[in-house]
Image 1 (cartoon, one colour):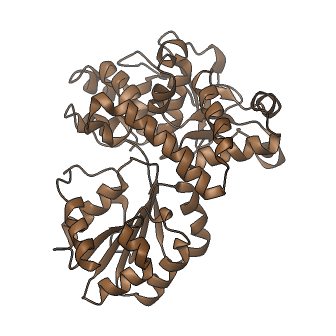
Image 2 (image 1 turned 90 degrees about the vertical axis):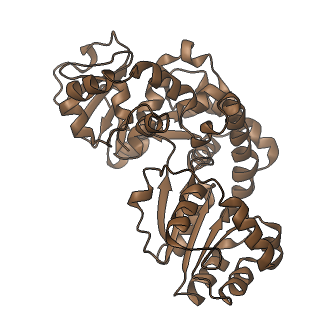
Length: 399
């Protein structure tokens, strides 16, 4: 068994990219047990292998296995770990852990037995891994990996290297930041390309087939991750697809439970449940209302597709017909990684309960948020801004 796993290990670790995602430097790699969660295709496996390559000399010290490997499935995670550590291994990487039945129990046993070994795990299904935190949070340090920011995309395209910024830096210094960027690259052209084809790192593998591959990822999330996590019948996947299509063909979607229940032909309770499943699986985002207490519960939520590449895979016409939706999807997606974001009573979004943001095109005015303290426009189709009017693309530099 071990010989075949070693062979598999060496095939996987070939030709790793040099570039490390934003999360790499934020992880405490000295921790004995680490779990990286996130959407399919964001680069979790690559990150773990990069760490392994830097820290350990060979498979004899750190072994990479996939939980759905035939050998691993045959013998089990615990028995595989026992067999490997008998030969003096120091660390074990377990990828796609959510695909292994009852993995939480076996991971718990591995951590309890091999307290002097480093265990690193990852999984594409945020759904199952989120629920595992209740049982394993004292033993494992969890990290969430998002897709590429616009800043990372520019670096991967060898266009320009930029430091990650805080929201306050963008709000206060955006004229100088944007002028510096626009003097070096055709930033609006790059931004448009990123919105369509730049969120998942695998776009670099084959740009021509990127959208087809992304469509396959969406199908796998629906038919594998969601169905297996909650025992959803395959017939209900049609409802999930209707939700995604509705979001991809609509203006920014403020949730009307009664209306959506009628359109989908399911109860209000299941509307909430299905939206939660899609959110946990990283196919969409929900933005909570700007309220608190009981009012917070009663307020509707804004529901958006997770990122603009997904809308390109489902409805490419949206880039002409629903530009407002594209802009809000981008803004919410980038801000959620670093800040608290909520729906605003006036304007579109509130950041950290402090900054009010209205998102729009170049002709957007302050009419809707006039005389409101800490209010700003995040505007598309402008290279540089002035005063409280900020180029939308700058909010892609947060991580």
